[in-house]
Length: 208
Ligand SMILES: Cc1cc2nc3c(=O)[nH]c(=O)nc-3n(C[C@H](O)[C@H](O)[C@H](O)COP(=O)(O)O)c2cc1C
Image 1 (cartoon, protein in one colour):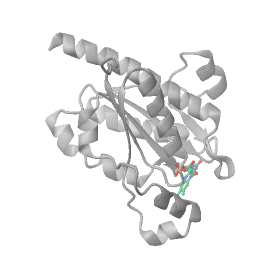
Image 2 (cartoon, helix red, strand yellow):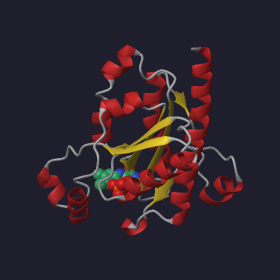
Image 3 (tube, protein in one colour):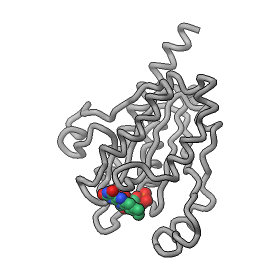
């Protein structure tokens, strides 16, 4: 086995599994490009009473109980980060924000500087806030001094089929799970993240 080209952590929140599936696809894409990858969910913070009102949410909470939970060490370890959240009223879920708001110590130490960061999401409507959610996640990268990486339009598929240069996005009609288009875009985002992050790492090591 050759040495990994870089380390990537994919951090996501998901209440019914859509963003979780995109996170796995993005992680697979990064691994296929040579990265060592961790995929981590952020902890659920909603009260049990609220979760119990929505059977799909309750099912997913039970199903994901043993999935690895993101820690600050997972951020510190990574050369590159992908952060994904469902769109909630046009922005990221509070569960994700709660986790991101624990990074003040890493920020103060300068640990987040020069990491490469990219974002992805799922909503239930095409104009319900996909881009605003990704942009709001990206705000953390600016404050961290990270390098904001868009998905872009680097090939025909991203331009003409999936079509969102901000980041992989899925519109979940009637609760549908991510389709092949969204999962392919997520994989491409992971490959791109690993590729660019490995270049940044080579440059950093060359200067050390
Ligand atoms: C409280 C709440 C707020 C939401 N806000 C939006 C929204 O602003 N725009 C939208 O299109 N979908 C919205 N949705 C739908 C979710 O973003 C969508 O179902 C997403 O695919 C869920 O992803 P998950 O399965 O990873 O949790 C909302 C859902 C909930 C429960």
